Amino acid sequence: MRDKTIIILATLIIILNVGHVGDHVVRGDFPWPLDAWSVPPIAFVLISNAILGFGLYFYVKGKVGPLFWAIVAGLGIVAAWLGHLSPFTEQTPQYICRAYASPIVGGFAVAWFVALVLVLIMTAVYAEYLWARGLKN
Image (cartoon, rainbow, N blue to C red):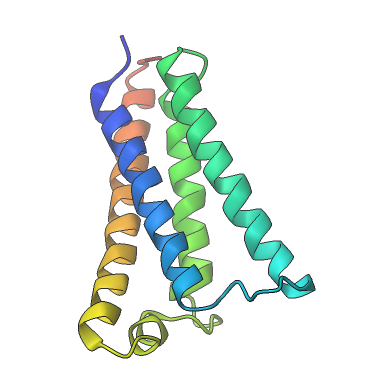
């Protein structure tokens, strides 16, 4: 039987990731009509969501185990750091908050991102714990 906590955490990651992508769309990070600069972030979104969706499906079917989720969550943490928390990024939490006319909406967008990162951290730690204990499910 699959670990229900991993299923819940993976589902939360998917929901929070889709909401975060929605934030990028609302802020105009994907200009229309699409240009050459739009291709890498759109490809990243499509690939990451495919990995999450298929990963959850294959986890439920028993084809991948907790190590898969530890790696995926770890990579998600790295992507979040590079995209929004590193000193080299332009889209810091302050930038996200100021991108909205309302500070409340901007604060909500930042809180959503923080929730995504926290769930990624919880998933990585919990999945690593399961894997270290030798649980395949």
